[in-house]
Length: 81
Image 1 (cartoon, rainbow, N blue to C red):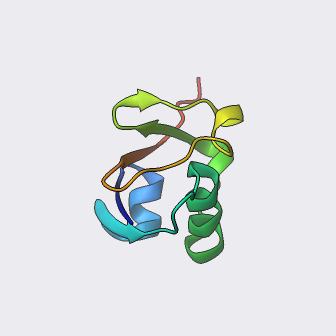
Image 2: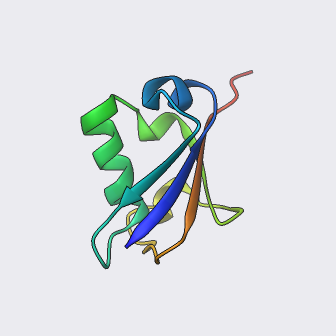
Image 3: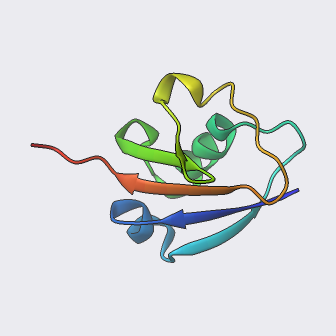
């Protein structure tokens, strides 16, 4: 199945593009995708705000949240004060 990733800030620089279509296995989770991005692009998932189809996904929920064909993930930097 395919999902779309939209990246802003540091994740965009690491991926070298704003939008990316990724093929993932059935049953893949957000955590699986983030782990793959960490391995292949050096992105630190702990430093990201993640949204799935416009809804914020808490860090603790990422490993269990399964993806479906056509889902969209938005990755952005956290904001430090």
